[in-house]
Length: 334
Image 1 (cartoon, rainbow, N blue to C red):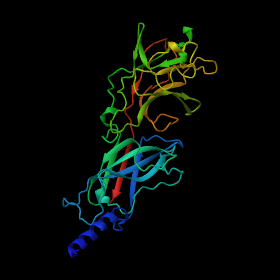
Image 2: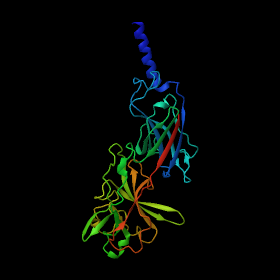
Image 3: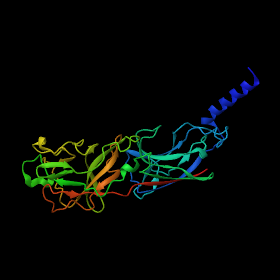
Image 4: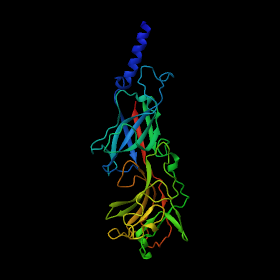
């Protein structure tokens, strides 16, 4: 074997080993701030990931002796939750730190994504993506703003047209008496004897590259001063079919009369709810399919006020479009 072949072989071996063990790049801390990111219960954590682009070693922008990583290899730079006061905490409740692991070139970081993951697992790859963004900045400082409209998350599909009317109505079709109409809620509109879907939401998935999401409807009941309880009305991927709850656990004696749209009744003994008593509001949210959360994560539609006491049977009641979504700011000192 010639000397030249030996040198090339040794160089190749050194580059391969450098991808995971190169001591040239120490761990790099990352600064993170968030706004409007919901707090989580103990079922889930947020995870921040950075990605590396295609190998750029041969285009003159990166010396050959720098660590290279493949197209869209994601590294996990930190897991966290948002406390009730808005502060970021670790999954165990302590101080949270974010860092690029040693051996990774901070100058090659391309973009970032935020995911939600089950607290029962330690993910090796990103799950359901909430937000994403592309790094900009200088050779010494990188900055990234992550939003839900990123192509790595939901894209522009999450921006709903507020000019479209989205409605729900009160009725209890699985119960014979019509005077208990306030014990059922359905996401549609009634025109004569015809019932049509009322939500004007695109079928899931909103993004073909981010499929682990579904819709979920909720009743939010205010109990005492600033204390809310959340009642899931079921999950659905389409607005023109029943949700995962069907007519609900509180279905009446005539389940076959349930409307073929998302919604449910609360008329069975022990499950009764008078939804126009002034304590209930309504939310329709995006939720991760892999985790069953106890509250809405990303609200899309909601009532600004409680369900009105004066609402009549099958009256179309409006839902407002939510325009406030999480934003994550990331700073990396390279």
